[in-house]
Image 1 (cartoon, rainbow, N blue to C red):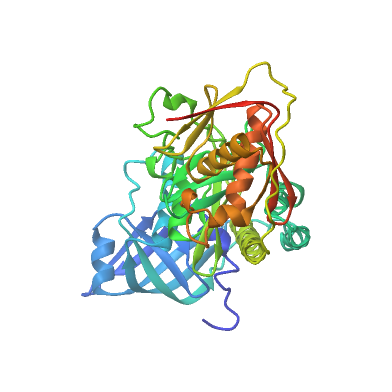
Image 2: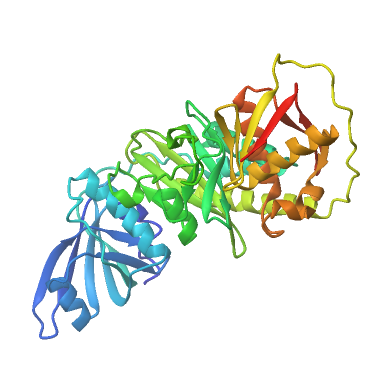
Length: 450
């Protein structure tokens, strides 16, 4: 591309899918063909990806002659840009394909074309030249406030955090304070079960802490599986990108209906969604997710900002986990059981070994790794009167069968702490220092193992 030509970054508004592009191809014997194309996707500084949906004349021409011209319209200025492009390859899986498929699902649903807009592949092209087409257009809109300052202030706030709960609260607060995002959540990945569990949220009627999404399910699950941002600008009914939820209970746990599962906190009718993976090196730690009831609420600037924030959060989580892992062991001090009771009858706690689910009375509390931890704490308290515990002893306890050292134990404890705070039974966890916490039980317990 020439030095004076606009860059793909300069015309990124053309890639938002608001207006279809026009693609001109030519057959091997020189016969031209012009067609509308559903999507031209920004794929880097020198590449774009076009949606491959039909094996039609356009497709035949490209396979015979890789050179083409795409005409894109800027929806804000009504000015055209012409791209000279050369076909390189077709991708049918992976981050680029999933990102395009998610965006296309939103476009299709918005235009009532769900049954037609089915992505078969992502055709990747090298951009050889970008040209601004002469002609009248609308005045350029006033420049929007840069999100760089917002990212800086959010990063500064995150840098002051010394614990995971502080870091999560800082990120969610920053989204609202600096980026104007009202509905957001953070989910962590359980590598063993290949599921994501909600550890923090803001803007919803219920926190949804402990609700789960499978890897590859919905916008959130696809972002985690493919390690790529997934952004939808229009409400979508496409099954792949709605939040497919599994019951919090397994079939072999009797007497408790799946209706008692932890409710997912998302908006009932979201019109814009953006899910960004939280990464650190080769590891996927979780997902930062935002949504809105308004169409086209999140542009590529928001995507860039959230990717940056998620990167800082991922690094902070790893540093906190590393500090926890080297913390010296602290002797666990038994405490005499209190003779006072805040309840007239013992709290009945039931544990199902099949999935480590724990119930207070008939109310579901938690399951999985966090459930196993809670059951251990309650058993030790009931048998020995213990109230003081350490992260280190939990990690070294073979009976808990915790995942390897790479698993974030602090995230499990934070999930457990927040779920207990929501139950109203009085049992709670209080952090007493780095790698140390206290179990508070206001009365007697009646433990039942099933």
